[in-house]
Length: 112
Image 1 (tube, rainbow, N blue to C red):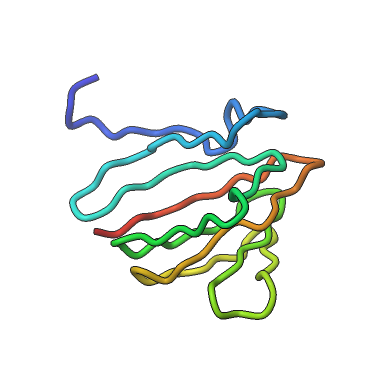
Image 2: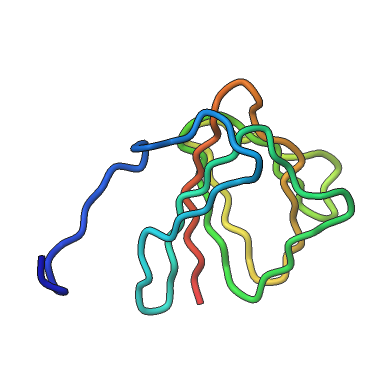
């Protein structure tokens, strides 16, 4: 395959059933953006840890479920398949929980 041939794949291929740590795979590096598949199997952010990123992150849950806490909100946002959130730069957030009974598959786009 040449460097300019279209790439393809399946977001649900080789999804592990159980992981010690969350798995992140970069699917595409595009001008101004990075696309990742994230698989969680019960993982959450470490106590007291908050993401504080320089870029916008757009994330959608494709399978499973998760609780996403945005700093300043009173409760985590419960995300089910199809639910997405656009997180502006420097909006602190954390993953409170992910489904322990089935893998949670996320698609994340980081815009630079």
